[in-house]
Picture 1: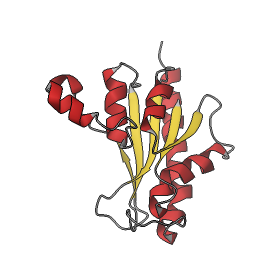
Picture 2: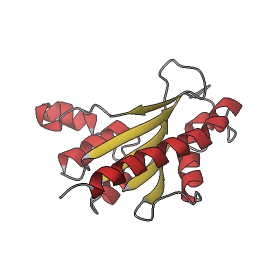
Picture 3: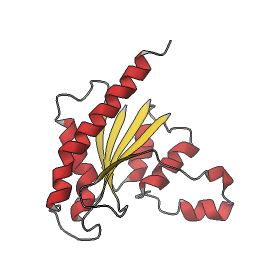
Picture 4: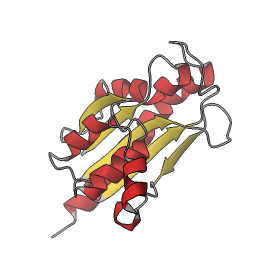
Amino acid sequence: MLVAGVGNELKGDDAFGVRAAQMLAQDPRKPRDCEVQQTGIGGIHLVQELMRGYSALILFDAFDRGGKPGDLWLLEPELPQAGDMSDRERRDFFADVHYATPVRALTLAQSVGALPPLVRIIGCQPFDPDSFDTAMHPSVEAALPRAVDMVIKVLETFNGLESRKP
């Protein structure tokens, strides 16, 4: 299982994903078979890591869903199908060679057959997604332990389901 934190540590609340991954890496409840990485804004690194083969992927990320700062969501991403795109649409969609947007990185991973069967995103509502700062809003900072609790529950549930497979 892979848990990855995405975001930009120089953009305040956007650092949520990276900081949550750091917190999870230090948590004694983290399952032994769980790899934790901070991919920051380098989505291509996430795709390369997924090519090693994982049974599950959970991303921590900050994104605006119109909630209150610090609100958390557990989401299953809806990814476009690259095969349904024209050549031009595919080129435009994948034009950023770093794939800084998680959806683009996940779509590329899906296209090359590296996306695990279980993919979830634990997202946090930022206060200001566009500020340039190294400090996060207090509400977003306070959401970090709750996000780690969420990922632990998801991992425990997934491990329970996996252990019941014949």
